[in-house]
Image (cartoon, rainbow, N blue to C red; front, side):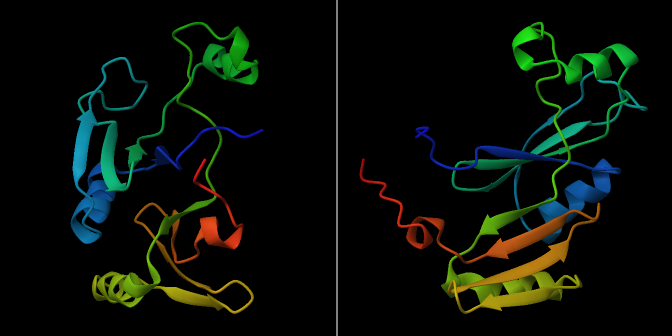
Length: 164
């Protein structure tokens, strides 16, 4: 299959404390907030709280930070069904857990990004690969999600032709 995609459009992380997560992603890492949602229909403990925040992370990609939802038994049963059987009001935005995600960083910008992250007091580790010329910087956000800054060119590594 050859889907006509350009890359990642959005990624959503579940967070336990919205203010803490937004401060980390927006203030510490510098990603601007695009919008925030306060949906009274959402099954969160405090309906007066922002339950979703979208941040711009570069290219055509946004990162969502969402509070956990308390699903009813009916919701959980619906999630087990094939999406083709879901009604229009289904939980299309709720999937499985993410293990980690990587942000693409040019190799020339790697050390600058590393310095910025370490200056904010975050614990990091760097992994350099020789068999695939690339570097990764790993760190955690306030919600214990593992974040990777990755210099590997997926296009070059896999010799992907993007000319058509």
